[in-house]
Image (tube, rainbow, N blue to C red; front, side):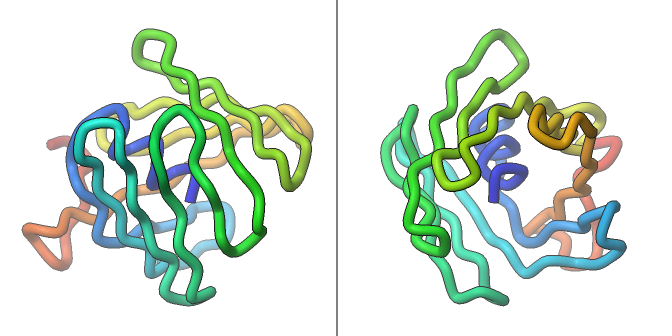
Length: 122
C-alpha cells in the first residue's frame, strides 16, 4: 500500500496493480489521488487505504501511515509497525527503503490504461 500511495502522490497517475519484486508476484492493489485525497484498495486482503494527506489510514492494519514529501521523495512512518520509510519513483518503479529492516524493496506499477503494461519507462 505504501508503494501505491507513493506512486499516486509523486506522479498523479493511477495504479491498477503492483508487481512486488521481493515476493515475486503481482498484487491486486488499485489507487488514485485527487488533490490531497488518496484512495486505495487491496483486493487480496479486502482492505481500504486512504484519506487526506499527510496521514492515510490503513483499514487492514487499523493504523495510520504518515507521508511527508521532500522534493521527489516521501518520508513516512507506519504506526502499525512503528517503522520509518523513505520512498521514491524512478523510471516508473517505486523503491521503498524500510529503516526497520535496513533494506530496499522495489515495485513495478501497472498502468490502468494498458492492462498488461507497467509505467516503467513511461
